Image (tube, rainbow, N blue to C red; front, top):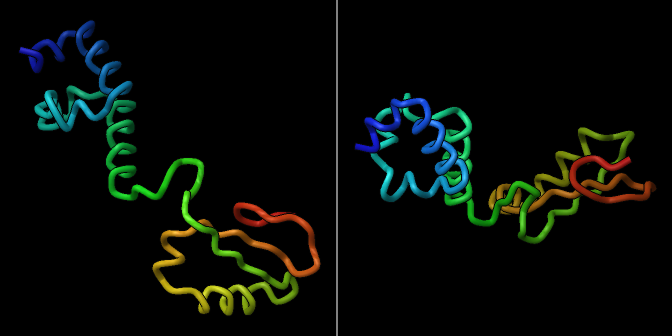
Length: 116
């Protein structure tokens, strides 16, 4: 019944608002909507994808990583060499699960990505 209702524009909008506000309903009572992608709007699909990503990587969030940071100290004049040296000292799991913070030798500031 709901699948048919999703083809009616007014119900389509209401169902998609519900999915956007609580994408987990697609894992529960409204999972049948996943079998027919035309019943979901693009924002609903994005909300569901974000939920799947969060479930796959529980330590990740959209504002960054919650785990301990990897501090990289880079020489601006030897950027490539010092960056490679710093990354090689880390385990692969550290690079994938930690928040990278970059600092340049002799410069103030630290944070996500490159700070100037």
